[in-house]
Length: 206
Image (cartoon, rainbow, N blue to C red):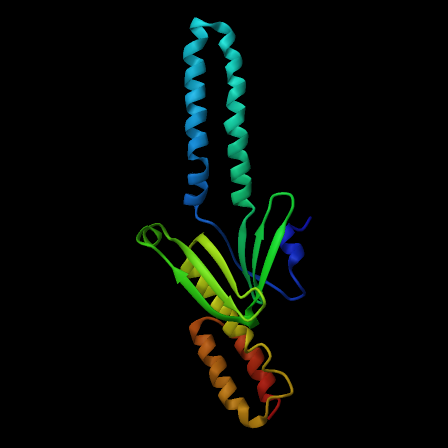
C-alpha cells in the first residue's frame, strides 16, 4: 500500500498523534461567492433556454466558478497541521509542497486565541514560540484548537521522559523519576505499558 505524503515525512519511531485542518468556516468563506455565482448562472441559463435555445451553451460558463471552487477545496484540504511524538508539522500546497517543522524540544510556549464565535464553533489560532531561527509559528483558525494544544503539550512533556533510560541518571534519581512517570500515567500521557517499561528500565539501574 502506497504511503501518503505525510507518512513519508515521518522519521523512525515517529508517530502521528493528531491531524487537523483549518476550520470549515475558512473553506466556506472561500467558496461561498463561487457557489452563489454557480447557482445564478444555472438559473439564468435555465430561464433563457426557452426564449433563446442556443443559450444552452451558457452552461459552459458554469465551469468557471466550479473550477475555482475545486481549487479552493484542494488548497484547504492539503493544508494540514500535524502533531507527532517529536514535532509539529505544517503542510501546504496541492502539487508543490511547503513543509514547516517545529521540534517539540525547541517549543518554549504555546498561545491559543479564540474569539466568541471561535469558542462557539470550535476554532481558533495557535501561536507556537520556539527557540529556533523561525521564532514564531502561527496556525490561524484551525479546528479544535484546544485538543491540538493539549496534544502538543502532552507530547512535549512525554518527550522529556523518553530519555530517562539514558546512562546519565543516577540511582538516587530513580525513585523521583518513577514518581514523575506515575504522574504522567495518571494524567493519561503515558499508557500503563509505557509506564511499566520505563519503570523497569529505571529500576534496573539501582
